[in-house]
Amino acid sequence: MMKGNNQNRQMSGSKRNFITKRLLSPPSSSPPPSQDFVAFYARMSVTEKVPSGHHILVFDNVVTNIGHGYNGVDGIFTAPKDGVYVFIWVIRLYEAQHSTQLMINNVEYGSTHLRAMNNDDGSVSGNVVAHVNKGDVVFVRVYPYSGYIGSGNIISNEHGKPSFSGWFLQ
Image (cartoon, rainbow, N blue to C red):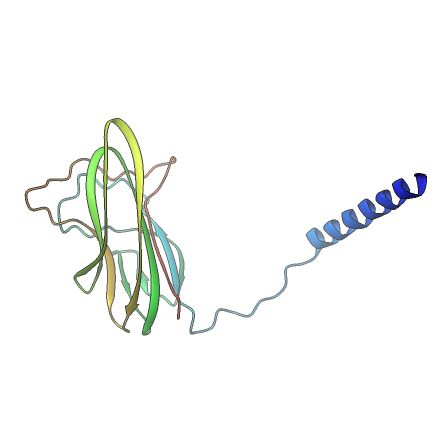
């Protein structure tokens, strides 16, 4: 029995040393991203005040922009190469309701709707997987209302920020 406890102590010690060594090891130097890799992630840094239909949402706080396809000034991603891409967008509302669309060259590829009323706060996300050609533009906009009116602000604050991201799949 004593021998078993001693082995457990030794194993625990060796595991501990492995973990310590692992944590203290310098990060491996990884090669820079290849030119074939494209990815972006941007957040909305300020609340969008009562956006109207057709309004392109600008996610101005660009965190990642590998391939330099996303423009944080106009909110538009321009594909640097042909291929299949994944796009995800998240919208946050408080006491508001809005529909949004992910557009590729002015064609709707995805849409969301959120109604957060009566002191309610919520978020909604959408995702799209699509083939995009080099030079195609991708953006998120407020749905162009015809008879159905959105209302309120798209909220960005310390409790959550709307975001838009995408990456080249193949």
